[in-house]
Length: 337
Image (cartoon, helix red, strand yellow):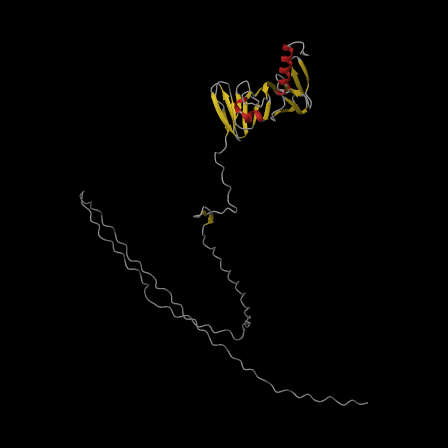
């Protein structure tokens, strides 16, 4: 029986082509979002990257000062590029087998945020992001890479854990932590770390003196009752007005009686007793000096005080009041008409 194929070799070649996996011929991913200036370079050709543009191995994607792009890969992974970025798909293979999978990309400048797909979940060792100073591997599923104004690489973990390696070694970066790569010959430096254990939320409401009871529950500590201040004393009532008593006017004819002053006592004025000082005993060191007697002055005769006569006040003169009988008034004369 004669075969319809020209030669057995051609038939074998066509069978091998039919059995070749379609993943090797499919694109690595597609641009699902692009804004601003976004360019795709493939070899010597360059074109604008728009939504739906296919991305293959060896493609370079450039974003301008206001350009942004998102690439969805065939394994479900996502890469978002920031402005002024240069991103290269170095080697990509989604064979469904950890031994043949590859996700190797290169970030020369700018920044990117990545969410890993099935390639990184099947074997994290197959997922690598290479930069001029460090290589970023994954142990989780989300991270952020970018260059700061000084040209230093900054890597932040967003979910689970990633690994940042330089020539000096590797450090782990957990979610909420960040490292800064100064050079390829130094270990990355932590710029932000998080607490290992989450802090418990504060009780609501929170009061000073709360304690933990035996059942590991918060119980308020006993506090003394607040004393109630006593009510203020009532205001004193205003004093009742005192009725004024009229003061009688002085009578010029009957002045008030003023008793005479007591007579002065005659005699000497008592004087204070003299103060006696104790004798002062002195040790004679020099011979006594003889002084001339001081002439005594005659006593001064003092004039006795003048005694004023007592003041005699006469009793008031009482004048009798004479009441005269009323004088009768004669009736008026009759009126003659």
